[in-house]
Each structure stands twice: as structure tokens, then as C-alpha cells.
Amino acid sequence: MTIMSEFKEFAVKGNVVDLAVGVIIGGAFGKIVDSVVSDLIMPLVGLAIGGLDFSNYFLQLSGAPAATLAEAKKAGAVFAYGNFLTVLLNFIILAFIIFVMVRQINRLRKANEPAPAPAPAPVTPEDVLLLREIRDALKR
Image 1 (cartoon, helix red, strand yellow):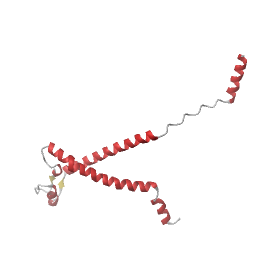
Image 2 (cartoon, helix red, strand yellow):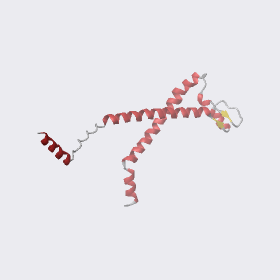
Image 3 (spheres, helix red, strand yellow):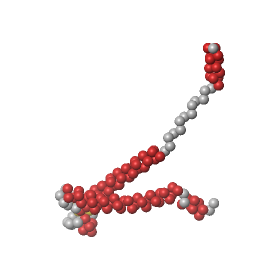
Image 4 (cartoon, one colour):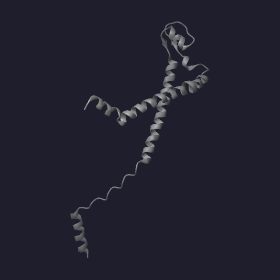
């Protein structure tokens, strides 16, 4: 078997294709969640805690004062805890959504599984059958 034929067999296996599709959809889904968090949720959180832009919470480590995170990063080292909190919230939301999806998929799988066939009645050994016949004959 040549290297190319082995690679072709590997590349067209269902698991590899499923993984590739999952990675692509996951990347796109991650962008959607990032947009939901940064464009919808974080402004509401910022409003609730005083109307500040949550992504601009940072500590300038180089000592030069800066008004925004972008300016602070240009000036030197920055401890951007607001950005970290935004990314953490992204992760929590994404993990929760994936949990709900997997939970629902598992429920659907259980609902679609056929009921297990009833176990066959245990086969009575022949010697027990013979003893029963003798017992019944003696009763008569």
C-alpha cells in the first residue's frame, strides 16, 4: 500500500470528516458567541455596574497612563482583566450551550433507541421436565 493510498483512506474516513466539520462549525459558533457576549451581554453588564466599558478594565504595568486598552497595549505591558473576564464569560456561555445541546442529543438518542427485546424464557433442562412428568404421573 502506498503512502498516498493510505492517506486517502485516512482522510475519507467518517471520523476525520466529522471532526473537520465540527471544527469549522465550532469556529463559526465561537464567533457568534463572542459577538453575543461582547455586543449584547457585556454592554448590559457594564451598564449595571456603572456604565463603563467592561473591556477597558485594565492595569497599566509600564506606568504610562492610557485611556483605552489599545493605547495601553501600545505603551507597554498591560494587565487586561476586563478582557479576560469577557473571554471567560464567552467560554462559560459556550460551554453551557454545548452542554444543553449534548444533553438534548442524548435525550433524542434514548427516545429513538428501540426497546430492548424481552429476554427469552429460560430453557428448562430436560431432566427437570422428566421429573415433572414423573411427578404428574404419580399424582394421577
